[in-house]
Length: 221
Image (tube, rainbow, N blue to C red):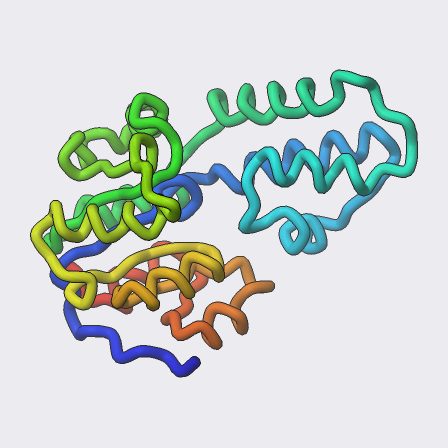
C-alpha cells in the first residue's frame, strides 16, 4: 500500500494515549527483561523490543512464560502482572518532547484509549498532562458494545470533535492500528520502534521516530 497524501495542516489530531504519549511500553519491557533475567534467560534489548512491542500486558506475560523451559511458580503470572502495574504507577512519564509539543499545539486534539476512563484520568494526572485533556477530549472503548470497539472509538472521537476522518491525523505506534485507521479514512502517522518501520510504511503511514519530530512534520505549531 502506498503512502496516502497527508493534508498539509490537519484540522484535528487524535493521539493514542496508552503508548504514544506515555512511556508505558518502555516500563513493561523493562519489567519483562528483569523477570527473564531472574530465571536465567538473557534477552537483548533489541530482541525484547521486537518480541514485546505492540502487545498488551496479558499477551506479553503469556509470551514471556512460553519462553521459559523451566517449571515456574504457580503465581508467576500474577506476580509479574502486579510488578508491571506497580512500576507503571511509580514510573509512568510522558515521552520526551510530549509536553512541549502539546503546549505549542494550536490544532484541536484529543486522546483515545482502551482502558477505563478513571484509569486514563489517573495516568494523565500522575504525568501532569490532565490539563491538556479534559473529559470532552478523552475517549475510551469502555462502554462501546460494537464488535470492533477500536474502530468505533476513533470514528466517534472524530465526530465528537466535529471532524470527518479525512480531516484528521491519527498518531499510533502499531501496524494493526495503521491498517484499520487508514481503512476508516483517517490520515495516519506511525511512531516506529525501528523494527516495524517498513511495515508501517508499507501500510501507508507517514513514519517518524521521535515525538519531537511531529511539530515539524505536521506543521501544527
